[in-house]
Image (cartoon, rainbow, N blue to C red; front, side, top):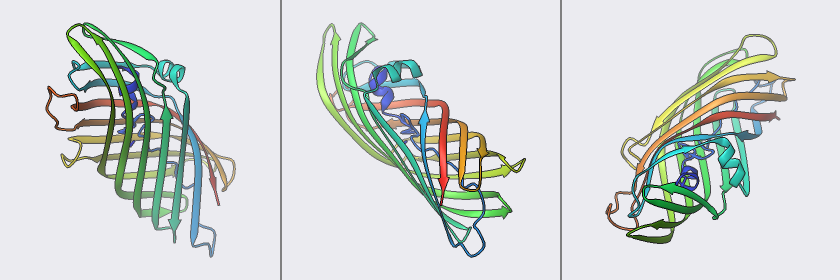
Length: 269
C-alpha cells in the first residue's frame, strides 16, 4: 500500500497504501537473489521487512477542513501499538512470477493533532495488501528485468473526534478500495555478492483512486544463494477521493506521498 490528522490519516496511505500506503506501499518488493538451480522449476522467497515512513500531503474527513500532513517516522513509531510486514514471492521456470505483500499497523486512538481552528483526536488500523503477476522480459545469469501487473487493496478503520468551534464531529470511518497497478522492475549484480534493484509502477487511472504511483530502489548483500539483506528507499503516492458529498460526514479524501528507508531480510527456498 496498499494519517488522520496527521497520524491516523497518514496511516491511510499506505502505502500508495501507498502507509501507506502507510507502511505503505505498503508493498515492498524484494527480488529473487539467484537463478533457479539446474532442474529446479519453482523458487520461493519469504522476506519480513521494516519500513520507517514519512508522510507528506493533504487529507480531509467529513466536514473537517482539508489538513496539511507532515508526519515523521518518530511520530509514527511513538504511537504504533502493533505492526507486521512481510513479502512473499514465487518464480516458475525462471520466467513467470507472483508476489504477495501484506502490511498491517495499529496506531491506537489516543493521539491529538492540531488542525485549522482546533484539534483532532484520531487513530487508525490499516491493512494494505498487494498482489502482482510478473513476466521476465530479460534474464542473463542473475540479472533480470520484469514487467508486472496486479492490484493494491486498502482496508482502513479510522476513529476521528474533532474539537473545532462550530464543528461537532465524532465517528468511525471504514474505507476500502482496490487500485489496478502496472510496473517494471529489475535486478543487476555488480559484484558476486552485491546487487542493485529498482522498481516503478503507476495505477489507479481514475477507476478508483485518481492516480497512484510507486518507486523503489536500493542495494542487496547476498550472503549466499539462500540469504540476502536488502536496504532500499521506497516512495508511494496516492490521490484518492470517495466522491461523497463534501459537506457530509462520509466524505474522505487522501492525497499523499509516503516515503522512507526499508530494511528486509530475504530467504529463498
